[in-house]
Length: 158
Image (cartoon, rainbow, N blue to C red; front, side, top):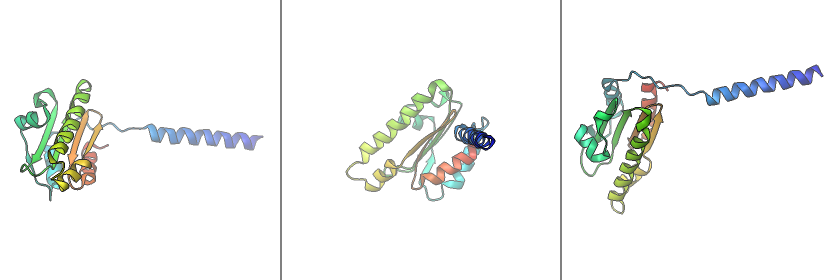
């Protein structure tokens, strides 16, 4: 009887431990600066044709006002036949859904623009990634988005 109880207790503790590990989500660092993000981009963007984009380009491409957010770092394609982009925004809880919708709309718009003639561009857009880490939302359109995502996770310490 004691062995059965000990086994049951062990299994319950194991289950609690596994659930704790699975449900634990580390918060992103709140103090990331624009300089930190630019340094990260410089280290990752070796073969990526992107250039810094200002508030007007952000508004034109995404319909977002950079003044409405705590942190905005946008890198846009270097020319009209390129689709590589990187956007990292830190915003408040109330605007997260708007930012996510703007990023999804951008991908959809670019897919429509390159459909039927830009095979490589369409391929990149189909593997575009949008991720949310707390109040940070990130859009990655690149040849190897997983490399960018790893760099963002390291930067945000998540």
